[in-house]
Length: 104
Image 1 (cartoon, rainbow, N blue to C red):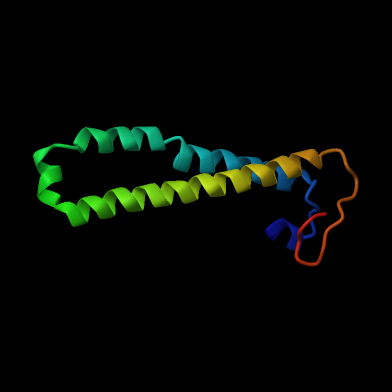
Image 2: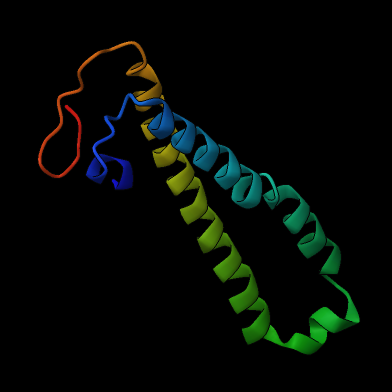
């Protein structure tokens, strides 16, 4: 959106680099760390500290983590699809855009 306001088409080098970097960074900081996080969560099960939390805190911790990670995966899929669409625009001279910035 920002680059479109500045007049850059979706197929511009700046827009493509921005999309690729955003996709890679989102994957690294939100998706790639999930296995490490859940290995630490699993290793905490059965410990004295885990039992002291109580059922409400344990449930809130686990449920909120799972819900947020599901949302992160959904966002990653959308970002990857958008990135793929923009990469497919490489080499095209004109990109037909609507007023809201969506391409056909």
